[in-house]
Length: 191
Image (cartoon, rainbow, N blue to C red):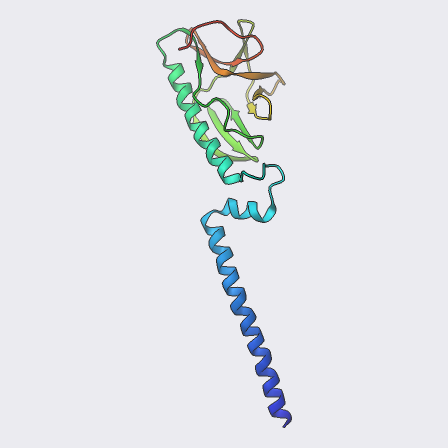
C-alpha cells in the first residue's frame, strides 16, 4: 500500500509541476512576443517611465525625434544651398518633437542624434559651428551639443558657451551657416 500511496503522491506532484509549466509557458510566450515586437516599449513598460510623461513612451519619443532630426538635416542642406547670400531659415518643425532625453551633438564632420546616451541617428556633414549674437558671428568649439528642456532648446560647446535657440534656427551669410539664437533677433528676410 505504501508504494501505491507514494506513486499517487508522486503523480500528483508531477501533475502540479506540469500545470505550472504550462501556465508559465503561456504567460512567458505572450511576454516574449510583446518584447520581440517592440523591445523599447517592453523594457519601458517593465521599468516604468519616471523621466517621460505617462502618455508617452520611449519608442514614440525616439521615432518622433528621429523624423525631426532627418528633417532638420534636410533643412540645413536646403538653407546652405539657398541662392540668397544673406537670409535666415525657419525650419518646418523646429525643435518641437525633441524631448529632454535627446541631444544633438556636432563634432568636426559629424552630426548625430543621441537619446539617453545612445546614438539614434548620425550623418557625416559639415554642420554649423557658429552662432549669431548682435549681428556678430561667434565660433563654437566642438563638441557642440543642442539640449532640450521644457523651455527653449539651447546649444552649448566645449568652451561652455551657451545660447538659447530661436524658432528660426539658421542664419546664412556670405556662404557661412550659423545657429540663430533668440537673444538678439536679426531683422532680415527668410531664405
